[in-house]
Length: 173
Image (cartoon, rainbow, N blue to C red):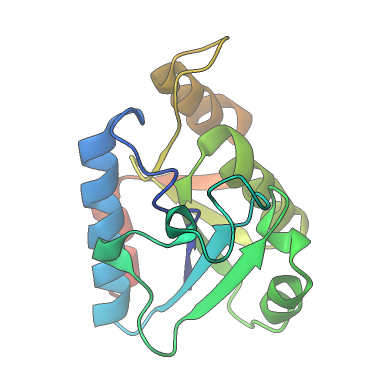
C-alpha cells in the first residue's frame, strides 16, 4: 500500500476548510501511522504558477509542518488536478506491484477527485479514509455538502470508503 498525500500546502490548509480540526488531526495521524509501519508515503504539491503564491519558492507552496516530508520520501509536483499528470509520478506508480493506494488531502472536488478517477482507471484499488479529504464552501455547495457528495455519491463505485479506524489498521498490516 502507498499513502498518497495531495496538496497539503500552506497556501491551501486553512481553518475555513470543512471539518478543519478533524481533517488535520486525521491526516497527521495517518502519515505518522504509515511512517511507523513502513508504508510508503508520497507527497504531491500543486504548482499554480508564478504570482499565485503557490509555486516553487513560495512559502505557500510548502507542505505543512506537522507532516513535512522526511528524508527519502518521494515528492512530486503537478500543474494539473490529477497527480497522474506528472509523468514521473505516473511512471513510478506504473512500476508498483502493490496496487492499493490510500488517498488523502486537498481539495475533494478538484485534485482528490481527478486523482481518484485517474487511479481507478489505471487499476488501483483506491482507499478513501473517512474525514481525510476536505474543501472550501463554493458558489454552489457548502464544503460539507461537497465532501459528502464526492465521498458518498460520485466515488461510490470507484473507491473503498473506510472508517478512519479501519484505515489506521490497514496501515499497520
